[in-house]
Structures are given as structure tokens and as C-alpha cells.
Amino acid sequence: MKKKLSGILFIFCFPVVQSVFAGTEIPGLLTEYPEVHSEIPDTFNGYFQPSQTFSRSRTWIVAGTTLGLYPLSMAWLYTQWYRDYPQTTFHFFNDNNEWEQMDKVGHMWDAYNIAKPLGKSFRWSGHDGKKSALYGAGIAFLYQTTIEVLDAFSAEWGFSTGDLICNTSGVGLYLFQELGWKEQRMVLKYSFHRTQYADYRPDLLGKSLPENILKDYNGLTYWLCINPRSFLSNSSTFPAWLSIGLGYGAQGMTGGISNPSVVNGKPIPDFERYRQFYLSLDLDLSRVHFKSRFLTSVARVINIIHLPAPTVEFSRGRKTVFHPLYF
Image 1 (cartoon, one colour):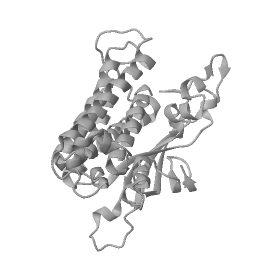
Image 2 (cartoon, rainbow, N blue to C red):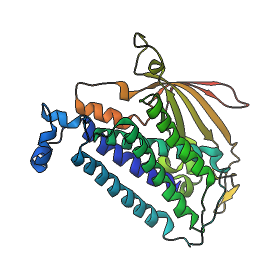
Image 3 (cartoon, rainbow, N blue to C red):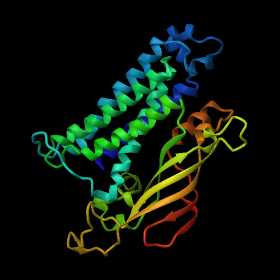
């Protein structure tokens, strides 16, 4: 859970910065940075389009943002999670059976959604598609691996090979598509709804909605959203903004590996732990273009979220459930 906290900080901060430089007007930018004026071919808004040639000033902006967020998020993570726990020598830790593997899927989501905006930002700086993808994937992998190394020297946790595999898978999903298709035809998203389980273990699953979103895996659903139009010919009439969502979630978890019967002297109901699989529609906001650059930028940022949509839920040993709107 701690890694998700740090990942969320980086994932939400950097896409906001990236989307700003991808399509939102910033008053006073030319006054503060007159040297970029020569890079604008026609209009002021040209500055917010990807550069056709290498731009040193843009590269410095991207590098400065990345180098700033990286130590900031790591320092925050250290003060929140590691500082009060004893340190030890480098060691491994097997947590592959925890939370019905929801945390492992979360690692894939983190790595993918860090690499994607980074790659776009380097593309905006004038780097070619291959270099931009490699830079984005490399920085995302470094970021995630740094957290694993911090774990490895903490007596409370350890270096998780399962986490490393999932980090690699998330980065690989981004890199494979960017190098092979030059676009993201399959994207990783998430959605969240509040559950009853946090009421029984608020210390572990969160006491408020923001904490619930970060800590309660029961309410999280991770999505692989596939865009059919991107696989079809240009003459296809299939809506470009419509995707198919394949989701994964789990329920009944009040503990990592198993559910305790008593916590702090209070009994907890015997909840059944089970996995959930979903089939849903998805709105790909990255393929929706608004007249407003600001709205287009906002759409790109929130495209990491699977918006409410009709959904079919499948669970082993349980009846199939149809949700008119599932989030």
C-alpha cells in the first residue's frame, strides 16, 4: 500500500504538468522565457504542440519536472513509511499471496501510468518516438525499482521479486505498444467504490474516502481497456472513443493473506475472500478532442480512470451479475 501512495503522487502530479505543456495556455510564459519565442513557428499555441526538432529548453523543462518530483516523492515516502521502522541488511520478501494479488496488478498500473506521460513529454521536447518511449519507460522502471530497494533495507518489508516482475510488465506494456504501434491501443485504468470492510479495519483500510481510495483494495478495480477502432482500417465506422474494458478486483479482504477473526478485542465477521472479473464498456478520453485545449488536457489527465459504465461481473462459484453502472 505504501508504494501506491508514492506512485499516486508521481502519477497524478506529472500528467498534470505534462498535459499543461501538451495543450493548455499559460499566460505570461513568453515573458518569463523569451528564449523560446524562436521555437514558435506560427502562433503562441504552437509552443504547446510537440516540437518537430530537438528542443533544449523543452528538454530542460521535462528533466527539471522529473528530477523535482522524483526526490520529492521519495523523501515524502521515506518520512511516511520508512523513518519509524528499523533498518536491516538487503533481503528479499515474498508477498505474492497478499490481497489476492490486487497489489501486484497495482504495480503494473503504477509503472504503466508513470511511463506513458513521461514518454509524451519527451516527445513534446522534440525527441523521436523511440527515444521518448525508452526514456519514459526507463525512468518509470527506475522510480519503481527505487521503492523496491528501500523495501529491501527495511526490517518491516523486503525486496519483492513479484513486485519487480509486475513493474516490468507495466513498463513493458507501454513500451511494446509505443515501439510496435506508435500508440497505446490498450491502456491500464482503475476505478473505486467504498465498501463495508473499511469499517471493520479503518487503521488498515482507511478512515476517510481519500484513505479508502489508497488503502482499501476491496473497492478498487483495475482495468485493461482495449480500443477496437485502433485495430481496424481507417475506413471503419466504429467509434474511436469507445473501448472494451476487462477488469479485475477482489472482495472480502480485511487482512493481507487471511482475515483475522478479532482485531483490538472486537470480533470481525467471517467474510469470504473471492476474486472478481469484469467486462465493460469504456470511454477513451484520449481520443476525444474538444474545441477547448483546457478540456482536452483535463480529459487526458482523467483518462487513467474507468468512468461508470454498464458492466458484467463474473466470480467463480457465484452468479453472473449485471451492473447498469459500475465504478
